[in-house]
Image 1 (cartoon, rainbow, N blue to C red):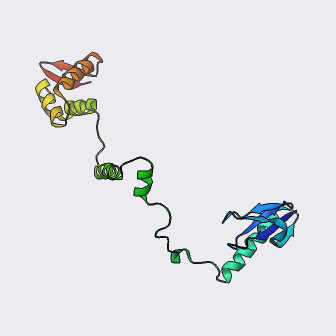
Image 2: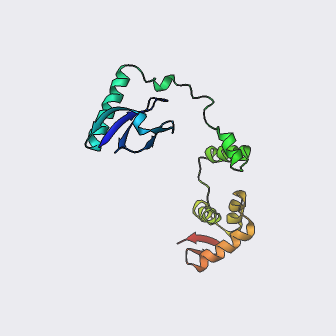
Image 3: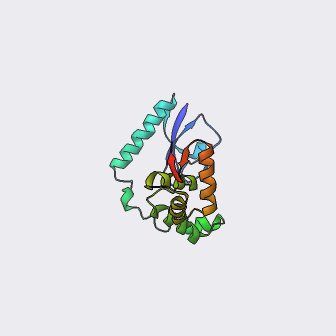
Length: 168
């Protein structure tokens, strides 16, 4: 047997299987003695009890007992972001700054290797000096550029003829 019961405190409706000694309201978490609860319906199946409960909730909505969600004032309810971050051991200002940095850039960051490859593609005559100049302007250290050019050459991704590099 399944019963549709209601909470005396918050007026929530829920379905209870069998006849337990106590049951807990799913909304306000108050524990009630089953025998003292108002039993609105008793059915053979849980599906039938769920339909009865749904019908009761729909009737209640038609009677205007529910509030319009837009009318509910939620200011001051719960924990704000700053409190949550602080309680988690994070600096809220640093998190906000990181978020601003992440949202501010529309261009994806490139790896140092990609910057060197881009230099080889974009420069008219990609000499070692020109690639170093291009990459250092993008924040890549000169020592990395020279090492990257050697590795790319050994890997067969670029070739060097007369001091000018070309991608293969």
